[in-house]
Length: 123
Image (cartoon, rainbow, N blue to C red; front, side, top):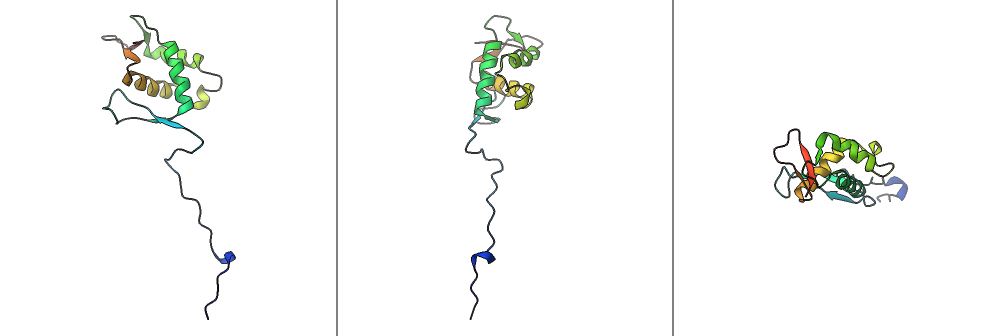
């Protein structure tokens, strides 16, 4: 007669890996990239971080003809970020570049034509 297995003999399965999937308690957005066609080249980013950087970039970038130098943008954005959203949330330069490309793709900011080094202005 076969023996019965009790619960103590059954190995519990570990939870499936969630690598690459956003956690339920952290909303993410897919940013656009002006350098790629629509739907390609986007980056996933925490929604709260994106909102903070978007607001700070739009505050830092003027509407005027000359705009702001791209090299000056990270410093201007870092001062406009809410407390605790600066370097503790990753590289400021990476976040600024990612959100800047997204805002360009959405038509909210643009590169000043013919400017070297690169300048950015509000549309």
